[in-house]
Each structure stands twice: as C-alpha cells, then as structure tokens.
Amino acid sequence: MRLAGAVDWQRVTETEALDLLLRRDPALLPPKPGAPLANPLWHLDMVRARDAWGHWGGPEGIDWGTVRVGQIDTGYTSHPVFGFPDHPWIDSAGGQTIFAPGPGAGGAGPGSGIDPLQDQMDGHGTRVASVICGHDPVGPGSPYLGVAPRVPLVPVRIANHVLISHAQRELASALDYLVGAGVSVINLSMGFLPRLQMGVLDRAIDRAYEAGVIFVCAAGQPLSSVISPAHGRRTIAVAGCTRDGVPWGESAYGSAVDWTAPASAISRAQTSPGGHFGYAGTGDGTSYAAAVTSAAAALWLARRGLEVKAAYPHPWQWVEAFKVVAKATAKPMPNQRPGSFGAGILDIGALLDEALPPASALGIEAPA
Image 1 (cartoon, one colour):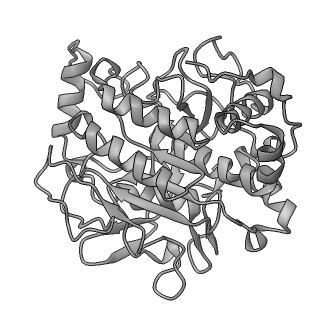
Image 2 (cartoon, helix red, strand yellow):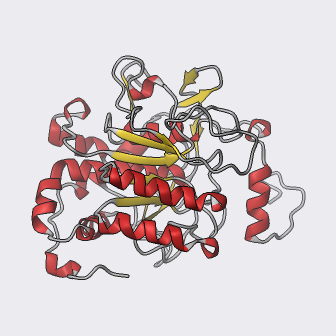
C-alpha cells in the first residue's frame, strides 16, 4: 500500500465503491506513469488477430458479408478511425438513441446514437468501438487497426455512464432493436450489480440468445464480482489480462467468466468536445476485453458463418458453438486459479481454425 503511494485505507461495500467510482472525475486523475508502449497494438498479437486476418490476405481484404456488430454504449462520434468523413462503416442511419437519464449532467443529445460529449464518460463508445472495428491508415503505427477492421457497426446510445442499473429498460429495448436490425454480435461494455437485474432485461437477453445473436459483456472492474448482465448464462463474460499475459489486477473474476482478453494499456481512439480526434494514451478496462471478443466473434462468423448455420438447426446453438470453440482454443495463463479467469486468453488465430462441435454436443433444447 505504501509503495503504491497510499497513506490510508478503509473497507467499503461494493455499492459504496460503485458510488465513489460514479462521483470520480477522470479529468482530475494524475497521468499514468510509465514509458510509451514499444508495441502500441500489442493486444492484436496477444490474441493472434493478424493470423486470423491472413485468411483474407490481411485486414484490407476481409469480406464481412452479412456480419454486423451492434454496440450498446454512450454512442459514437465521427472519428476518422471509423472511416469518417468519406466512407464510414458506422451505420449512422441505423444508429439509435434510447436514452435513460441518470448519473451526470449530460442529456440524450441529438439522437441517432450520436454521443454529444457532455459528461465524464465522454467518448467511451468511441474508444470501445475503435478496438472493435477501427481502421485509420494514417493513425499511430500507420495504420491504427481494430481487431475486426471495418466491420459494419450499429450504435445504440443508452446512457452517459457505464454504470447502468438505471437504464435496464433502455438496455432491453436496445437489445430488441439490434436483434431486429439483424446484427450477428452485440457488445456491451457497461453493467451493474447482478442482484439488481430486472425481468424485462432477462427476457430481452433470452430473445437475443434464441435468435442466435452472440451477446458479449464486460466482466467489470474494480469490483471482484462479475457484474450484470455478464454474469448470466446466456451472455459471454470476458475478464481482463495485461500485456504480460497475466490477469489484470482490477478485473472481476469468478465462475461466471468464460475467458479473458486484453484489458490494460490498450491503444484506442479518443475524442473530446469540439470534434478533437486523436489516439493519445492508452485505456484500461474489461470494456476493451469485451470489444476484443466481439470482434473475434465477427471474424469467426465471417469465416465460418455459413458452415455454422448449416451445422446447427437452432439459432441458439450458434452462440453455444462459439463458446465451445473459443474455450477450447483459449490459452491458459500461468498460475491461473481454476474457476477464476475462465478458459484462459482468447486466441483468435486458433478460434477460426477449430473444428465445430457436433450438434449433439450442444443439445436440442436451449440451456436455461
């Protein structure tokens, strides 16, 4: 504690910790120590994204077909990382604002999923989406690349903050909207304490699962317990690791975690009021681990989607098959405690080549 600079400490409940996090102003936090990363896009190599892109001859050649990713977050901005202004792959016409007023001073904004950049979580949706689908040829590292470069993304803005116990009805509506819009994968880098989950959200998650939509959720931080809705059986809960291939110290963990992905010192796009776009610094959080996994699901479906749909008669089996192959190909971490960080670190290179499990192994009735 003293080595970390702490002069005092006190024990608080998870609810009190969330309240403190909510009232924190990120603008007042001191800068992170440490030298710039030697490899700013290290997370791509850790999950072997470049090996996966090789199936299409590289990131420029990926054919996304009908694959689209839905993102439920704070909205999007017209950052060059998404191809703005000339050829964006963000579905601006399909973007939605289903907003729940809550913590913070910002409002719904102009609509259509646009982030008005009015509150302390300004740009969260942009940062997370850049890790999913970003591709900027003149970005840092030339180019800046997300894990699933240029995959079409449908944004839904539901809140100004990642703590969304107040926005469960809006989250449910966002899920229903995206399922109706035909997305294949949904990313949620938000959450709340599990005991607060409402039935209306449970039913929306069921509908997404039964439609065969892969619903990826951040496991959460800095609490140890996996947050909702990541903790549920019909979602995918992703914990976080560092560039050293070990568990990230702030990540939630436990039996609800399916696997782990990069979550610390992640290079991502950022934006600020007035349309100031950039890439300075890095970010931490299982928000990014979820983003990496959503991108992996999109790559898997782009390569194996026709085979998947031919192999399994029930759409929910598409979700289960993805879970099975991702767990089977994940790389265990050194000294990883059983039942803590899932199957290990996601390996997209192996994921795309793994044989599909037989339909009989997934059952004929959706698991509860």
